[in-house]
Amino acid sequence: MKPYLKVKRILDLLFAFVLIVLTSPIMLAATIAIKMGSKGSVLFRQKRPGKYCKIFTVYKFRTMSLETDEYGELLPDIQRMTRVGSFLRKTSIDELPQLINILKGDMSFIGPRPLLVQYLKMYTPEQNRRHEVTPGISGWAQVNGRNTISWEEKFEYDVWYVENITLKLDVEIIIKTIKNVIVREGINNSQMDTMPVFSGSNTIEG
Image (cartoon, rainbow, N blue to C red; front, side, top):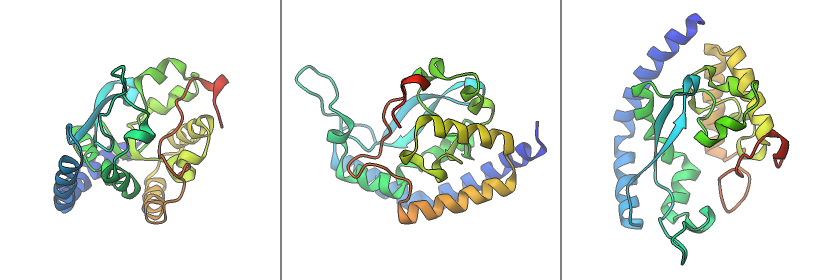
């Protein structure tokens, strides 16, 4: 194990605790806005694979309503995105509850984004290497295109990060992440901020 990974965990704990304290007024305001804007839980919870594919529950502020169609199925994401949720995503405030995941050790500030559990069986052995490190709130793929690049490109960036992880690289990613949040770089689609579903490397849409 690289020596930096031990230091990285200590830094994660320190900064996660500080940020929870500093952003608590923002999280309180987000909680109130979500409750007033639509019915449902304030937090969005979903199972995701972490380091070595260990499954954990990721936390985010809920950005979509729970509206369903006549058959009881949830409406498409673009139709369920609330006004509050759209703002939370644009400002990345919806990611703040993941500070809890960092304190628990499920996540880090920087690392490959934890994706859906059902994707695990679709990765190539090389792509699956993204799970050799703790997943992060932001990562090398996020600051190099985010929703504007293909799945294959994302995984290539993730594996490159695994092979080149250093404190200097993490600081660079943090700086670029802050810049991207401010200027909203790397987001495709003007109406929805979600990527198409991953269905395997042979059927990826660029």
